[in-house]
Image (tube, rainbow, N blue to C red; front, side):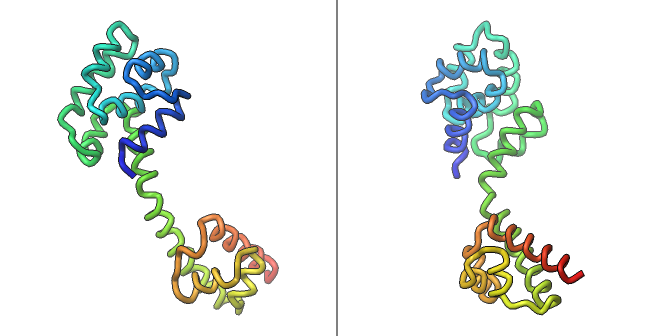
Amino acid sequence: MRFEKFLETYVRELTGQRSLRANVLVNVCQRKEHAREACFFYLFATGRMPMSLALAEGKSYRIEWAEVYQHVRECDSFDSLWQAEPSLPARYGKVLRSYYAAAHKAQSDERLKRRMREDFVSWSSELGLSNRSVALKAGVDPSNFNAFMRRQELGRLSVDAVQRVSRAYVEMFRERA
């Protein structure tokens, strides 16, 4: 996911605006303070910050935008913005961290599934359970769970399904206690 694409969605969500024109966003930021940082980064990423600073003349947040712009104006990629993050006000860093989390969600999900699969293998062995019985108890498709467990096909289960399986194991441990 590209930073600009993420920001388009994020800005629309925060502002409730369909239009992403600079003059519209500058005016919306006067009313919706919570959207200022996302709008700033969107306008910066699309090369419209100098024009936006002129449009924001007389607005309460113009000075802050100008100060933040001084920190990031030389940044030409998300990586360089990420490096500048510690020097920015915390609210601006929150936007960068939100993008980072969204951009790396697939890798995070895969790490979670891999760790949980290892636990499931151990727990099944400890409880003496078949993949089928666990899948049925968790309400997931037995063939997908079997592929997840035996062939390490992590894409066969969603994170939600993995969580249901985990809860099923917890129940089975309680029943055995």
